[in-house]
Length: 386
Image (cartoon, rainbow, N blue to C red; front, side, top):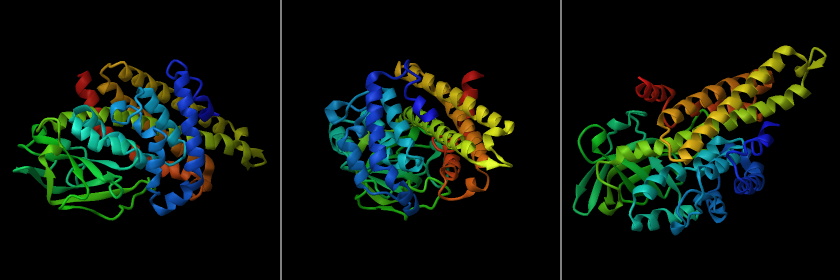
């Protein structure tokens, strides 16, 4: 099975320590997530204590300095965590329990010691929930033209505006938020950490989505929201560059989600095609089915290898802006094809709730939109090759 081979067939990327971590995360998923995932999907939410369970095991701290409660590690530790969590079959759940993975890096990279103590450690421990606030109702991928303003008045920024499609919005205790502190365009953007109990902060009800049902998603609002000046991350008006730094890791994470989505869909098909009979023989008895499965497996293998190579170069400090954009588009194109073919192989059952391929098909759709759309990825690539 593909899922079992992926942990052992890539020894050039994963050490014995990585494999030990993989087994620990796999055990956690088996005990703490898989038995409840159907219930959480239907409820459009999951228990908040899941963050704490992850924190107690040190999984939230992968990639963060030990000085602030982290457990260190490299990019492939993060790959292992992401892969094994995604094998629960709900990338929406993984997006929410991993929202700190896109909310904390700007603080870790550019925050003060005091900010790291206050906003890194409690999240790593699982005692607070962190979300990232960038996307606005007036423009998704057009980050440079965001409208939420932060005007300095004495010891506070007064924030006005709104953000939408915010993962973990209803659970979050803190938002790493992009705001406009200067003039128009990319050069007028800053990052603030905003506590969700701040005066003037509010959040919508859970947003109803096509997929990612277990992902806690909402819209947040700022009405003369008072944020201490000391909550500015890094330099004022440098936020756009911090956002661009952050996007690379997020896009790698989406590659992994797409690859595991493809892997799970393929594995379901391999089992089903052996068991399901049509016209007196199993589906594997038909050349068209065998060839479709062969194509799915080939595409997945190519996408996973591409993702791992990009991750390895990022781990070595090599700039991979172009390559990670390519990898994201390729992984999502593959998962689009594989999940489509999986529902075709399952026929009517592929359209029915309760079958994993149905969830994979609808959850997959967001992957080529989140973290920068497929079209934005092509713009980045084209600018770097022309």
